[in-house]
Amino acid sequence: MLALEIRDLRKIYSNNVEALKGVSLKVREGDFFALLGPNGAGKTTLIGIVTSLVNKTSGSVQIFGHDLDSQKSFAKSLIGLVPQEFNLAIFEKVENILLQQAGYYGISRSLAKQRAEKYLKKLDLWEKRESQVRELSSGMKRRLMFARAMMHEPKLLILDEPTAGVDLEIRRSMWSFIQGINREGVTIILTTHYLEEAENLCRNVAIIDHGEIIANTSVSDLLSTLQTESFVLFLAQPCAELPVIDDLVLRKIDDKTLEIDLKKTHSMNYVFEHLSANNIVVNSMRNKVNRLEEMFMLLTKNGRS
Amino acid sequence: MNAQNWIAYWTITEREIRRFLRIWGQSLVPSAITTSLYFIVFGGLIGNRIGSLHGFSYAQYITPGLVMLAVITNSYTNVSTSFYLSKFIRNIEEVLVSPATSTVILLGYITGGVIRGLLIGAVVILISLFFTHIVIAHFFIMLLVIVLSSALFSIFGFINALYADNFDQISIIPTFVLTPLTYLGGIFYSIEMLPSHWQIVSHFNPVLYMVNTFRYGMLGQSDVNVVGSIIVLSLVAVLSFCLAWILLEKGVGIRT
Image 1 (cartoon, each protein chain N blue to C red):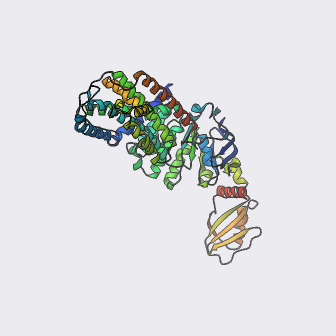
Image 2 (cartoon, rainbow over the protein chains, first blue to last red; image 1 turned 135 degrees about the vertical axis):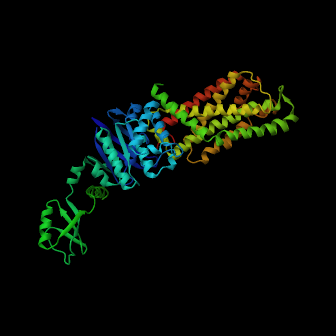
């Protein structure tokens, strides 16, 4: 079953900017789906329309087969949103934020209280339940927005840059939380600027640029189309002279650091054989840039050229 | 409304009530102070020289108008400020993404405004007891007029907040429209005291009908037709509700 089906979605703003140019997209139930795109590509508009925060110009959106126009209330009850920017009532108490959110979805107070306790504990905010939102740190506010989005236990959770501006530790705990709810069957749509996040978490991806979908496939298929990968090699001993190896592009960064562009047709063994033959010992290595980032740059650059 | 909508409606209403009670120093106290000042200055010092109006002391005569003045301004401000603030900090999105319908959202905000109106009306009546003797001629008409007037001005406040792009724009209407209308709406005088042409002009002021109908409920005296006023007030409230509903449904001022 499809969790989200978008057909020929268009959005023209009042200033005549065409933010979406007939976008069609399908996200399967249970998927962990990345929606990527450069700033101004149309991601936020797309999410805005799906979550009823932006009026569409034309096209249709279905949530688990329920049309967002004709079955609005029911379709909306299936969606949860963690927005990019903080949109919490700062003078409200943490627990009240969650109870109110449940109330907007018609959830009884007793069930709301149970869920508030469950998600506040899961997201390590239980001790802060009586605090006002303005007293929370940025990381805590992020986690509170996660808890808020989960209060009606949506089947489709949309995360718009959910870990922007939070430290690594909190980001990892959020990843673990999101992976947990995805395992429980919740479909996740994630937009993020951290492409490492998308590569590690998501199974499928769509890249949007200039209001159009320019790629829509699985993350692994997308990465397999990369023809070249760049690696940074950290050497055990200084390398005086750069060796010449057929078909390989090597660059010297400093005496103990090399960069190499490896074609898909070459194996790592091929590289190491030649380096060993030139008495170069590699201590460690890493990708120069995240692979998805490389692909993303390639696709969005192509879109612009 | 089904159970789900009732819960959503009550959640918005309760949130609105808690909001104005939390800021009681800003929401309830100012009306109590200004009402006391009106009674001291107009009811006591000046009123004693005016004598009686339609058989009532001046302090008694202005009491219904002072109640309506407080009710109208508080209902309007409650909804316009609260809704605009939600737009400003964007927590209105919490409601907009939820299945709560436009009717539920609108009714929740209006009920919040009406309850503040009723509460402030009670506060002003309570204060008036320190300055004058209060008689209540028709309690249910009083109650009906307060509810209708505060509902109507809550809706106006809601529409104002939908269109407002900054805080200045939610104070323009109260300052330049609401205040002149209320002060010229027969709070401090009977329109019979005006020259005939100003009497005609006054009949175009909707607040005149609210003040006088409420005065009828409280003192049993009115410059206008009470039944006609209540019918018109109800019709205007229904039409305004429909307008606000259409604007909300279209997302004017809240959805791009």
